[in-house]
Length: 315
Image (cartoon, rainbow, N blue to C red):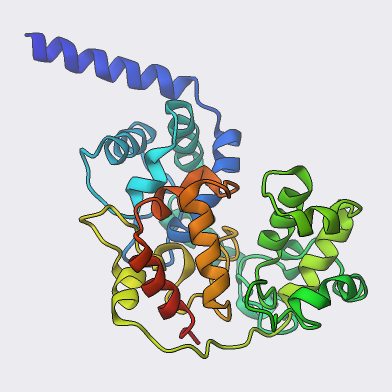
């Protein structure tokens, strides 16, 4: 009898949380989820589940289980670690409100959606076939090229840095670059040099710079591979609770543009090491939901050396 009463209590609690959920807030919070589960809750990869049209109570339960460890998954554990009950309820409300994968496919077929209807973008930028290019780039590429002259000394004229301590920006997703610039300006990301550089930038300036660098060609990695780093990048380390890098940054390190997960290809080992150390010690904390901090804190110096060496070999 006690077990039955407890189960009813849990069920009623879940229902009350669901009723108070905000689907619009969930949509805003879902950017982190889109890399694996798709922008509209329909995953492009068979290894990740579709969330669109899923039962909201079920989604909440799974997120709670990932957070508590009742359900074990190296990728989802750090994703759920910093989610509050409100966050979980909002995400569940959003995904449950979306048409299912079957319904979305049917709607797409009836509308005659075709990738040929999508305008091509300059450079090597990936275009999501369901999204017009204009929606991906809020800025003006030509204007960004003019404004990028101030960036060339550290990041290179075409966004490919020749100085190992500075990141390459070429081919990086526009929304990621714009976010970093805004974070430098607000102080959410601390850097003495960048704080001065962004102080006078408007949001339009940031969008223009982001658009320009996003359409530049990334130079391929020239570093030597590393077998330990290869295993960490592709498989993580379940014993340490380390999520595989591939979940957010992709097999070739190109990142997930729609989710603003950055491209790692072409970055120097020095820069990558600095950023992982910064996340690990907490001096950098502008990662969504603490994803990188939760991963980096579990990495040893040897892990960081191995995985950054492997990343420099990605083409």
